[in-house]
Amino acid sequence: MLTFYNTPVSIYGIKTRILLRHKGLKRDEQLPPGGYGSAAYKQVVPSGNVPALIDGDLLIADSEAIAEYIEERYPDPPMMPTGLAERAKTRELSRFHDTRLEPEVRALFRIVSPTRHDPAHAENQTKAINARLAQLAVMVDRRGKERGGSGAPIRSKELPLLLADCGYPATFAWIEALDGALDLGIEWPGAVSAYRWMLEEQDAVSATMARYGKVIREWIAEQ
Image 1 (tube, rainbow, N blue to C red):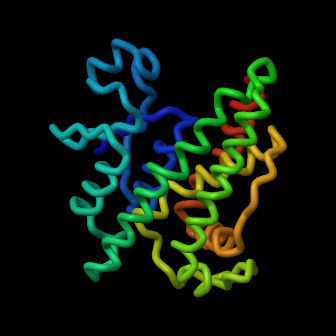
Image 2 (tube, rainbow, N blue to C red; image 1 turned 180 degrees about the horizontal axis):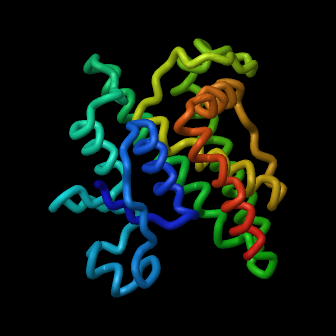
Image 3 (tube, helix red, strand yellow; image 1 turned 90 degrees about the vertical axis):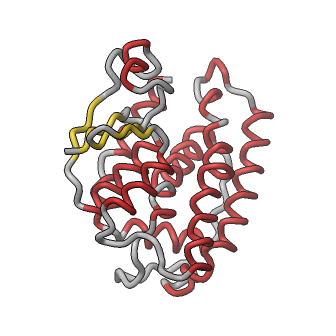
């Protein structure tokens, strides 16, 4: 059985949970011993990163590396296209989440507490997130149009869940929650909304995200 180290609030942990659930893989999910970043955890996972996955003698502590390993080790159901160009575009979409969109959202975490609120920082990050969402809209427009890119969701599952999709549901949920908490003024392009609805129709996404919204709200309230 796979051993999966994670923390409840981790965006990349949710990304990996969606992947594992979609693959139908059983795992022993554990909190980092001693807490995230602790010396005790680093005895198991030297980098201290979450999520981390142990499969036999193999340890991987990076969500993207985990995703690609799982896809190759457990290829059914497939979560990568077969064509060379489509596989490249799928990797591009995944990297966009990890290196472009998510970091802009994460940059807001430090000002959620009223005692640390910084209106100028909030305004700058709102502009940055809106710009990233506009860029994402172009990237997912084809998929969004196939699902009703005008903004109206289509209740079907014609498109498969891909590795690149797994990070977005948690980040979208954080954007929505932070927008409500900080009154940011986030702009959701129609193609992105359609893409989000498409993801939420997937069983692995809906089942994984069912409790995550509460985790986000509790984290914000604690700040």
